Every structure is written in structure tokens, then in C-alpha cells.
Length: 327
Ligand code: ACO
Image (cartoon, rainbow, N blue to C red; front, side, top):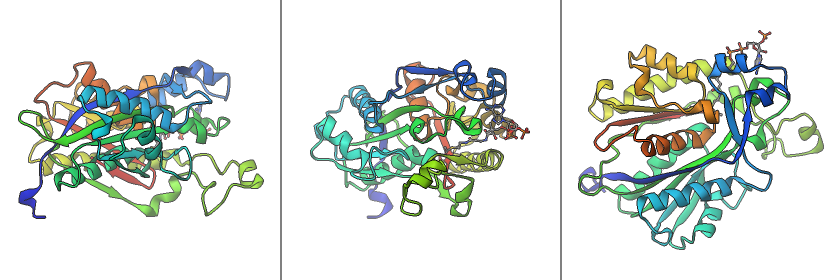
């Protein structure tokens, strides 16, 4: 299909879900050697949400998906595509998206998961956009959902203070008159940097055994400073690239919605790109880094709170394990 026949695609509605349980910095102080002061100063995070024992990633995804469908005025039965971005699927298979399909009642939908760590939601959005642009699908539900608490080593202060659980979702469909549209997209990966952020155990390389579990290789490992450095670099270049591809300049963007990993990363990017912090939407103080869910939750909150208005240009930018990045 040539470019001329590609249809513009719009976000028709958004939704999000955060588990009830709040874990504050004060709570973490009782679990590992850390302090509210250290966490606040180094990350900006004050508290995060933790899923209940009975809640799996699909439960978070289903709640966010329901809200996005209601917000968009779209019936689940009309969905052609459900994509769940996650690194904490309910099971190795079936895909978490299939559990979402079952719960929502979306028999027409093709369902699969995307694995791109914190970048997954935008990878999923771009896939859905391509399906719709080419006419392969009319309506898609894209969900970023992660229960990172399931893969955190709760004795490792280097990682456990950073993350939380949650889900965010968006319904995509062909752009109608005045509905706005996705103007551009950009993404990239660098598999050479696999080791600075990963969960080394539990897959086919190092299957779960009493030894791997004892050595906690089924939990997240991170070289924090390295990740930080690459996060700033990749999110800056991805920000510039998506804006350029849309034929715009940073001044045209009313709201920047970056991956919610660390306030210092966002402030550094704002500073280096000479963009005032007021134009960045930040909610990481309340939820920590929820991986694939983070920008999706932020988009939903920005929309519901009136932070973004009809006609605004929005730039979403993410980075994560892989490494991966997208905007
Ligand atoms: N409380 C108190 N002290 C701590 C804690 C803690 N929670 N964690 C680490 N420290 C200590 C370290 O042990 C170190 O002590 P030392 O100097 O005696 O060795 C000291 O604090 C400084 O540690 P650094 O790692 O140098 O601290 P830094 O300023 O780099 O901040 C941080 C660490 C917050 C992890 C930062 O590097 C960062 O945000 N990196 C990016 C992480 C990230 O975004 N990851 C998610 C990626 S997205 C995805 O795909 C999941």
C-alpha cells in the first residue's frame, strides 16, 4: 500500500488503573537501609502503588482497558486488535492480551503482547497505528501494564525504591474530522546494552531452579548510573526526532509526557533542550516507575485533569530495558 492511502489515526480515549495499596518512602525505610530524603532527592518519588497478591498484570490491564473504552465510547465487541505491552505477563503464554480479550468480550480482536520494557506502550501504539493506517484494523486497544513488584528484589535498595505497579490504556481508531491525529513516531533499540537492565533468570537461558531463585536472578538487575546516562541521551534524541518528523519545533509542543522513571532525568532533558519544566507532565512522585504503564497513565491523567486540551501538540517519549526507546 502506498503512503497516499495510509489513513491518519487518532487516540479516541484513554484510561488507567492503579492498585489500592500505597507504599511510601517511610514504609521502604523500614524494609531496606534508605531514607525518604535519599529517594526524594535522587528520584523525586514519594510513594508507589503495589498490586494485591490476587491481582495479576492482566487484572490491572483489564481495568485500564475498560476505562479507555468507556472514555472513547467504543464497545469491546468492536475491537479488531488488543496489544498489551508488559515485561510481567501473567504467564509465559497465553499472551496477557488474550486474558484481556476474554474479560472484556472482544471476540473479533487479534491479541498479542509486546516486550520492550518501559518503551512498550509506544511500541504498541505504533504497531496499532500501522494496523489502522493500512486498513487492517478499525479499532485497537493498546495497554501498558506491569506488576513490577513481582520481579523486584525487595532487599535491594538500588532498585526496590524506584518501581511500582499500574496500567494505562488508549483506544486508537481512524482520525475523524477535528479528532486530532498521531503526527509522527520514532523508535530504536540497542541490544548491545542488554546487561545494564535485565531480569537474567526465569527464561530459557536460565530457567527457574532452586539455585536461580536462591541467587535471585529472577529479579531485576540494573546498573543505575549507566541506565541514567543512556536514558538522557536516547530520550533527548527521540524527542527531537519525533518533533522533526512531524514538521514541528519544540516550541510547538504544549505538553511533554516523558517516561516516569526519575525526576532528575526529566529535569536534565528539559534543561538541555531549553524547554521549561512547566511543559512536562510529571506524576512519578505518586507512582514511581511503572514501566510500560508509566506514559500511558500519565497521558490519561494529563487528559482527565485538563492539562492537555483539544488542539494541543503532545510529545510522548520513553526508554527502557533492551535498551529500547520511542517517541
Ligand atoms: N537509599 C540510600 N542509598 C542508596 C540507595 C537507596 N535506595 N540506592 C543506592 N544507594 C547508595 C549507593 O549504594 C551508593 O552508595 P556508595 O556511594 O556508598 O556506593 C550511593 O547511594 C550513590 O549511588 P548511585 O548509584 O551513584 O546514585 P545515583 O545518584 O546514580 O542514583 C539512581 C541512583 C536513582 C538509581 C539513578 O542512577 C537512576 O535513576 N538511574 C536510572 C534508573 C532507571 O531509570 N531505571 C529504570 C529504567 S526503565 C526500565 O526499563 C525498567
